[in-house]
Amino acid sequence: MEKVDTGTMVHPAPDLRSGGRSARTELNHDLAMLLRSSRQQLHNVQHGLNRVMTFEPLTSVKDLVIVGEGPAAEEIFQYCEDQTVRGYRFRGVFHDHPLSGPLAPRQLGGIEAAKVFAVQNRIDILYCALPGSYREEITELMEFCERNTIRFRVIPSPDSFIPVVKTSDLTFHGAVPVSRLRNEPLDSKGNRLVKRTFDIVFSFLVITLIFSWLFPILAVLIKLSSKGPVFFKQVRLGERKKKFTCYKFRSMQINNEADSKQATRNDPRVTKLGAFLRKSNMDELPQFFNVLLGQMSVVGPRPHPLKLNDQFRDIIDKYMVRHFVRPGITGWAQVNGFRGETRTPELMEKRVDMDIWYLENWSFLLDLKIVVKTVTNMFKKDEMAY
Image (cartoon, rainbow, N blue to C red; front, side, top):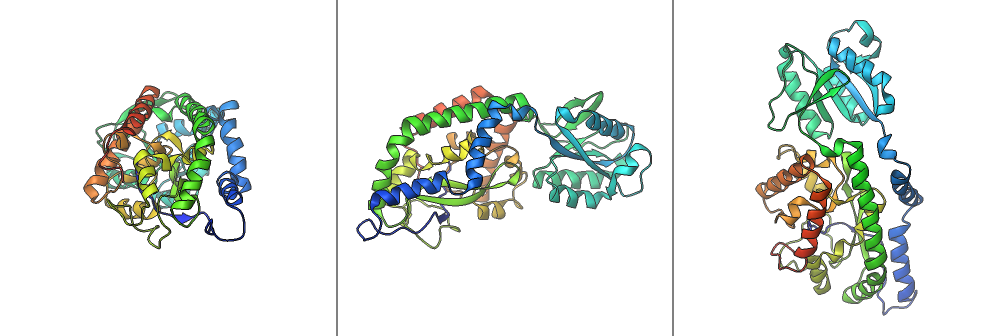
């Protein structure tokens, strides 16, 4: 698991030795802040459970746009219009010249306008039906989609240009072949249902069987180790760049660099108890509540601090692709040695490569393998655990 412990604290808390509220009241308040920080979070807990109970993953809708024209584009449009129940909702078509035929009434602007519309309306899929003479525009659209966590699809035609990528994949929408940049098992609603069910069951067991009795012990020890709250929070990016509040047990003293500086080896900000929590991964336990809220998964790419995302998104190719899936408490990169501090762009690039490999090769058995490996690593000496 990544050991980047930056963020702002949940709330200021007085020393246990001072007057005012009792220690028990403070600890109860800290837990309440985790469970009930807002009415919306409570709604999200129920919503997350309903995703399994009502099979919402099988009925969720993906918004899409088409850039280009032609018979195949018209077929995709008609397919999506007729098959909304299959999970697609057509939002508009874009081209640099006026269109004719069935697509004309749905034209919203030119190619550049498509980019603005896609970001502002959180478009899930962009279908490209431009001819090969638009090679430069097609490449730019692909790169734009990768940077903005929008899935890019090419509708092939005799004169089309399909960007060459090593993991390209071909699928069909009705009778129309569509080229994808990569295979994504979690693009399947059935696979997402399996993963979400596992997340809820596993998290519920961890919270019930481990967190419930370990929390009061750790809470007292954290309070005694240094001044400050039991939990700390930090805003991070989730699936499709949705922001959420990520929780941990506090392992550092309160400091002014929490939001800008990664934890380093022998970091003076880390308390003695915090060092143990970080090495044993127990500081991550509160994130199982994030999983129940539907903001995280048990397994997935680790969510990075916002400033770390800003630092690397423009210098590492496909950095934002890792946000096509929910972030995880543990991940493929973490169990393969790429956890903790990322001192150089090269280290971060290797982590990103691992994350992308995971989303291209996901299986339920792979998730189980990562969970088992994470547990066994907790009992081994990991030089990157600090």
